[in-house]
Image (cartoon, rainbow, N blue to C red; front, side):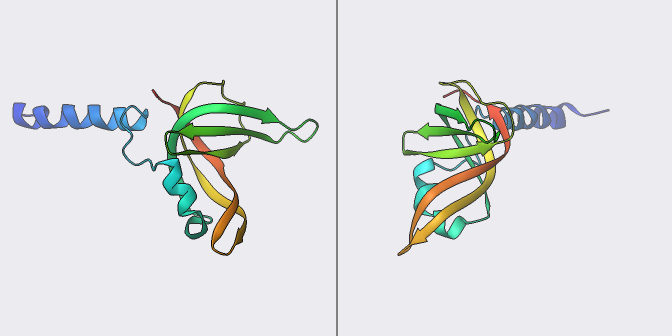
Length: 122
């Protein structure tokens, strides 16, 4: 049987873990502006960002889908194989960061290849 003290610790920890996983607490996410600034050194690494969907598109006949995620520090494009999210929807997105090109240490064409997404309050 679980003692009351252990129960008093486990329940709040479980709740915090659920809130983090749902994006309600932005722990483990990076501001988009920081990701953009560090993009050359983050090539191919997994990043996790939180923001609001401000644009979404699908290329006809190819099936390529992408959407723009924005927070108070900046914006970046996310490519996905999943259905596009709704405009204005808050998301926590994890995925692999790619730079189209790096010129003079400055990244051009930054995008995240989505691995997972969760709805979040923004």
